[in-house]
Amino acid sequence: MSLIEIKNVFYQYNETKKAVNGVSFDVKQGDYVTIIGHNGSGKSTLAKLIAGLLPVKSGQILIDGKEVNEENIASIRTRLGIVFQNPDNQFIGSTVKDDIAFGLENKLVPSENMDAIINEFAKKVGLEAFLNYEPQNLSGGQKQRVAIAGILAMKPDIIIFDEATSMLDPKGKKEIKQLMYDLASGDDITIISITHDIEEVLQSDDCIVLNKGKLFMHDKPENIFMHAEKLREIDLDVPFIEKVRETFGKHKIKLKAQDLKGMVDELCRSSSKR
Image (cartoon, rainbow, N blue to C red; front, side, top):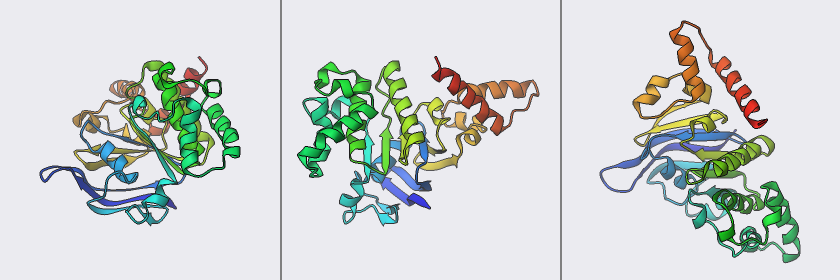
């Protein structure tokens, strides 16, 4: 059964341009879904629509059968968290501990239960030694991990990453991507990642491609990247491994989608051992 249903959704910021133009797709419980597209394709707008931060102009967004609207938004937001681009704009507390505690306080969690919860999720994101640190003493990647810990402490069903690694240095990007992979493989959390990172896409279960506000493709990543020329036509790059497959093709060596997936998995395993 689908956890999220997007049904012919439209949204526009002005009368001349539809930011999201008749988009429909489903997301299954526990899937790791990436959404890609050029700048202005509607990715971040769609993320905000799913999170209820923008109102749908027409169409429907359903989460577990419940429509995202003013009537239901309070209960839906208890099931969903969103991590934005800029880590500096997400730190609310004066320390890591205070920041993770913020959502728990709003949820009226008894104070005597908070320390155990805070310690549990600080450890999950690798920040148990940083609980008394102030934000100015943290890297961008560490701030993003604090934001994720605060969301995880609320025990959501869905986490949306809205280009959450785009403002980080290479080390921070690697840390956050690894945490996302761990969440996707170890918990029954549904992840939607708005990203420009093509290599990240290859690790997801499902990929949505947007172009000028419309759904351009929706398939498994290894199948999406078999259409390299179509992706290049809308200014998207293809992963290195697909470029290898193309090179093989020029020499009349056929490489099927399942072979491509196997090569990607092996490269990822090798990379993680370094």
